[in-house]
Image 1 (cartoon, rainbow, N blue to C red):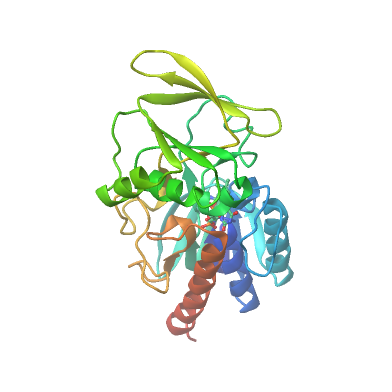
Image 2 (cartoon, helix red, strand yellow):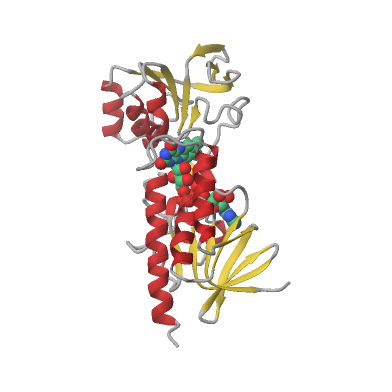
Length: 309
Ligand SMILES: Cc1cc2nc3c(=O)[nH]c(=O)nc-3n(C[C@H](O)[C@H](O)[C@H](O)COP(=O)(O)OP(=O)(O)OC[C@H]3O[C@@H](n4cnc5c(N)ncnc54)[C@H](O)[C@@H]3O)c2cc1C
């Protein structure tokens, strides 16, 4: 299959990739963005974004489409392909896809991450309608309502505590009889009067038609089932970055996030990683956009220095 040559190849069309594409293309680099699904990434699943500075309230899909149009207006090309590998091609990089290879002087990986799902009926259908994987993003929509927080690790406690700024009650539902979270977070959670705990319990179904109205529960010890009425379900049972195609190529942390420096550089010259796929991302649209911009500027410097004629 034919290979196509670009200055900058961007892998992943979420906020980080779209922002990188804008800066790369506007910087007069021949730029292609490769996306395997829907442009916008995680944000395309979100009904309302209220915390992107300068845009008071916007539908996630619409925000992503506006970003895409802006980047394409400066010449960024978009290809809908699944990236399967990245490897060196002399001084450049080869990005492998099912639709042929893309060669780039620099590659910016913005493949993002996916939240682990419970995999129960109602969860997918009600995502963005009461089911959430991000309290920082969505807790404010549930002021004075009751919510469930699923999980027992640091993220569940940290985000669960955040929900109590808004909700009237947050019930932590955990499949074991103790938390995995650090002691300090456990102490804060136990001391918070809005938080209560339901042990040895799993969610079997998220209930509701247009919006979440409750959850169906099962006690894993007694087998007893019950229903709990509530308006929101915040799920924190882990997250996995889409970094499999970088295995063995870049340094990663234990959770498989790419390790980068403050310019989003991996240790491989010309290979950058930005947004939720990188270690220590703040996991927000605004921070991912900032990462993408940083990576594009760093890639521009790298190309200028390395490929000077
Ligand atoms: C339901 C939900 C609601 C949220 N609400 C908010 C909010 O209100 N405010 C906020 O600031 N943040 C919110 N977030 C978080 C925010 O969406 C993420 O932090 C942000 O989208 C991360 O951007 P990203 O570009 O790094 O990655 P992503 O958005 O994950 O995008 C990565 C893209 O890469 C593509 N990709 C992955 N692998 C490949 C491959 N092999 N080949 C080609 N393409 C690939 C994916 O299909 C995806 O489109 C929310 C997240 C979720 C899940």
